[in-house]
Amino acid sequence: MRAILAAYQGLLGEIDQWFAGCIQVAGEQIACRAGCSECCRGLFEISLLDAALLQQGFLSLTAASRDLVRMKARARTAQLQQQWPEFQHPYILNRLPHNDWEEMPEDDLTPCPLLGGAGRCLVYAQRPMTCRLHGLPHMDISGESFSDAFCTLNFTDSDPLKIAALRHPFAQTFAREFDLLADLAEKLLGRRQLELDTFIASALLIDFSALQSKDKEQI
Image (cartoon, rainbow, N blue to C red):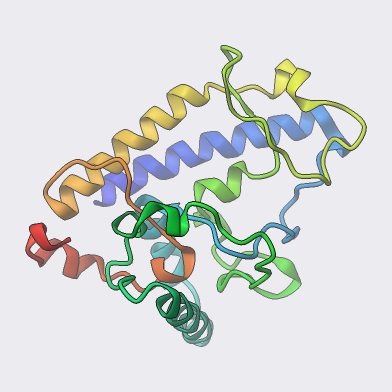
């Protein structure tokens, strides 16, 4: 599992390099910076890879910070369980009816439990892939669009979809991500899966050691 997460962190580092390159190209047209927390609210799914990496960052926090974050995570997960009683450990969203969580409410402004003071992520080095990608469109170097959405604070007077320098080999990147997720699933669950999603709050409550010792047919 350690080797899988190390490989995943390397992949995330490539995403960071791409984003930094986009800032060099576009300059002030991109408002996204460390400390901006406009998108660090509400619900959005992350992969089990992200969940495991988040826990590494979480364990590096001080005891007082861990206690506060854990309290927020438990409270948030309890709220979700009121809506979805079957959302129980290991908190895999894909076990729920897909329509229940496919569209998250846009008016949910609940801060991420890992959001610290001054709008900074407490585990910035271990933040999920979606947090690193958010704000810019995801145009593959081939011209294929994986997402044409971008933060409204960015590119207020230009079209980033037309800037070729912002493109990245996303098809290859996402394929590598899925391979690593399948490797992790095989390690934990005994079978390769490509859809294993959870939320950040519930990710912090997953007992990965218990997953490895459980009856795989029950997960």
